[in-house]
Length: 152
Image 1 (cartoon, rainbow, N blue to C red):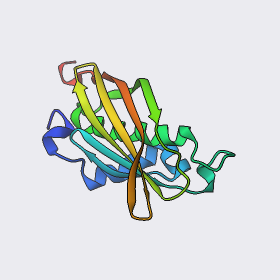
Image 2 (cartoon, rainbow, N blue to C red; image 1 turned 90 degrees about the vertical axis):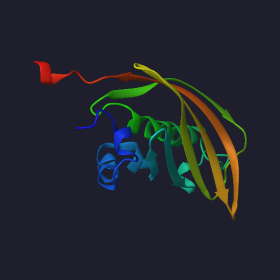
Image 3 (cartoon, rainbow, N blue to C red; image 1 turned 90 degrees about the horizontal axis):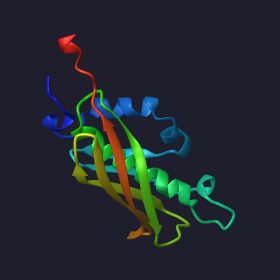
């Protein structure tokens, strides 16, 4: 059995089908996992009125959430199966407001150690055939390796 998802390349379509079953915020917001490959993750969402704050622009929390999910999809394929992981720190810069179209977040691993990883994400607004970067995120994730049960 491979030590990590990376040894299999991109996550299998079956696995990508399984992720959303336990990913409640994905359903709540209507996010879609576009890619979960070795070191790169992509998540998208269609902009609609549910995502707006009173000024009729997409709430910053939505933009951060899809970036965080994309960073997770970048990390998942390169850590040992069964590892627990999560965001321990993140910084976001919002560059442009979003009012319509789709959002696409792309996460890329900058550094991966044994217990932490640094990942960046860019969130793009795709609207009327144009793609524009609207936010940049830098996150640090913890990685807790699974216990080896074969020696017990």
